[in-house]
Image (cartoon, rainbow, N blue to C red):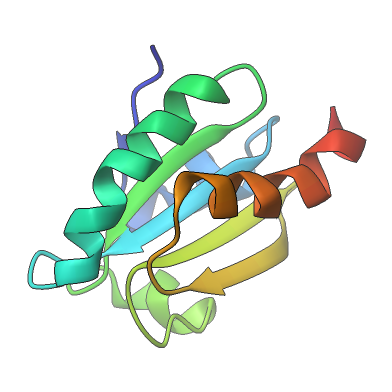
Length: 111
């Protein structure tokens, strides 16, 4: 079972931009109802896709640098990075199949 790594602005470059594997960044907030619905989806995806990518989560309020740089307008939000490049953005609550579809668009060619 893969863990979802909690990171902050100071860890973003090392954990996301310099990662050798694709990274899905999950932006969330403690006050966000839809984020609570997304938490089990993110955990499931982390477990099912552990061999394909790393998943990290960032709370938006204490991490304004990444939120601003990657134009997170609302939460929950997902940003997929491959080789340090942002390749996909999604905002709003999503089901596990919806997240899988987003990942499949990019990971089938990256693996």
